[in-house]
Image 1: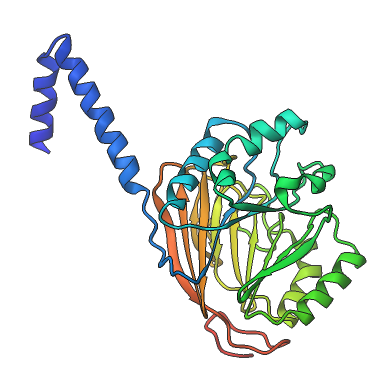
Image 2 (image 1 turned 135 degrees about the vertical axis):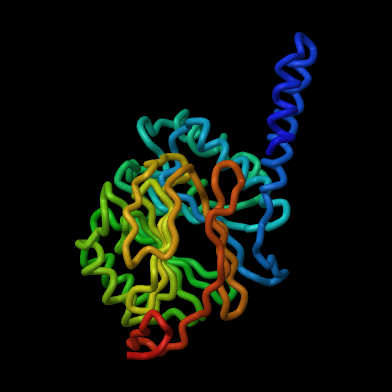
Length: 311
C-alpha cells in the first residue's frame, strides 16, 4: 500500500507526457483486467446442452450492448447454441427499427454464428412479436422444444388461461426427456422489493410443475439476478438484468441462495447428464454466482424437499 501511495505522489510531480503515460497505463491495465475476467468456469463438455439466459434486456442502451459483447466473447470458449429470453425483450417502441436497435444489432455476432434465441413474452412486449422470426416463437405465445435430454417450455405468464394450462399439463405429462426446464417472465418466488413473487401465477403453474417433475425454472421481471433456495424440490433463477437494472433492490431472506443487484448480468447454463452447472456474469465480466445442481430423482407427482429427500 505504501508503495502505491509513493508511486502516486511521484506521478503527481510529472507534467505533460508523464501524466498522459500514467493514464494510458491505467487504461491498459483496466482493459486487461476486464478481458481476463471473461472466463467461463463451466465444464463445457463436448456433448452437453449449453445455453444462455437473459431477461428484461431490450433497452437499446449501452449496458445491453455491453452484456451482448460479454456473451459473444464467452461464446468462443463456451459455445452455447441457444439463448432463452425471459420477457421484456423490447422496451418502448417496437417498430422494425426498434427490433434492429434493441435486438438484432446488439446480438449480431451471436446471430451470425448461428446462435438461436427462443423468446417468452413479458408485460412490455408487443404480442405481435410472436411472429418475429429471430425469436423462434412460430407465432405462439407458449411452445416447447427439446434437445438431447432436455425439454424447454416457454410459457406466457402475462395472461394464463385454461387453454395454456391444459396444453402445459399435456406436454409435461408426455415429455420423455430427463430434464424439464420452464421459463417465462413473472417469477413465482422473488426477494426483490419492486415486485416480489407473482403469487397469482404461482398458484396456477406450481401445481403442474410439482406434479409433472419440472426441474428448473427461469424468470425475469425483477431487474436483478437471484438464485433461490429450492421450493418444493424445484430450482428457481431470476435473470432480469440483461439490460435494465434496479440497484440495491434485493431484500435477502431465507429463500435467497444468492443474489446480485449492482450491475447488469446474464446467465450461462450447461446440462451434462444428471448435472446442471450455472454461471452468472456481470456486465464487466465478473462471475457473481456459480455452482452445480443434481437432477432431482423423483417420479411424477412426488415432491422433493430442498435437501433432496421425498415427502
